[in-house]
Length: 245
Length: 245
Image (tube, rainbow over all chains, first blue to last red; front, side, top):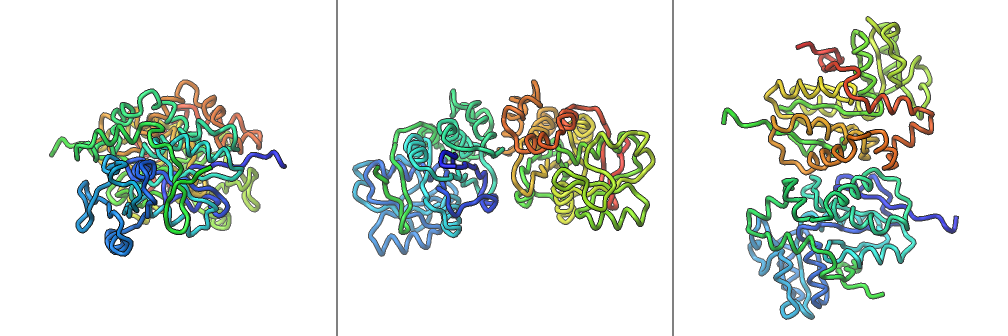
């Protein structure tokens, strides 16, 4: 049994998370457009930490208490009372270095808190900009993994599944994968990997359309680019910080 | 607005059904291995009707009351107290013609009752053996559609999604499809359609493995064959009967 591989599952929506054994697992929170891409970017650019919160009110309150950067959007605009948005391009080294980012995101934060409530062993965040860091970490552990797609108000989206598929494609030899959702995710990734942007455009993906309506093609392209902010955001004591080896 | 196409969505699991507007929709119940394949087959072979029930106890009780054929399996064996199993091969013309089949299935029946509770406009069942009948019906109506995958205790499976994808591939020009799950389903079907059996085998699909462990390769192959029992099972007044045009 010593050589038995740990299991890996993919949850396509927070509404499905309770189908999996979270309590001893490493849970990867995936919210490709744009929360987890922005988290990786802010930390890569030297943010001290990122504190994810689930409401604008909490974001404002905490931002005042700790003198942090408050950020979050509602319907494509900076939410009232906050100072910054969800775009990874807002968080340059010059701006975010050494600072604390308090970020309100609906879907990713909800999933993170669910994983926390279910006593996940470890919680990290994943996105194409930090794909390799996530994969390297998962392979370095001998622990069960749940790839948790944040979705949009529980509705499945393509891009989170593509990221889950990219991870599976790289780590699958290290895990026992008896999970149709994981097979679907990898199949989708293999269909899309030649050009992720063209793929989600061609598939008329809901978040592609939503962000394009806000003029955010540049954000979408960045959020689909591998390893441009290759750090491992690790959640502990209410905040995400870079996990060093 | 007269020419506006009705919407089509795909629900990958009963746990996701409440995300969609069921109340005015035609809901297609999909349980490829094997409930909805067996329902199509029994009706194609002349069964008077199929009554889906959610427990063995109800199956036994109703079977006595109406002198019906009681059928259902638990863990690959005919359930205690019932007379027949879930295999489409049990329901030949000679056996099932003119009779009522009382069938207990866990996942498909649960989803059907959910759709009923949410006031679906119409409920039909779909499987590869009656693919064309389902598609022709959906295109003949001008009604919103929800393709409802029965899954397995809410866990997503590949084969139900492949069937949803096959339907989408055939009917998509008649519907407005802004639904990532539907795009995923069609992509999966396009990957698989050359040989559905080989595909689910290669993908190590959970139900492929479960049924192969019971020696049911023949059932799997049949349940992945298009239009061999091409009728439209229509749910009304607690039972499924063949809908004629």
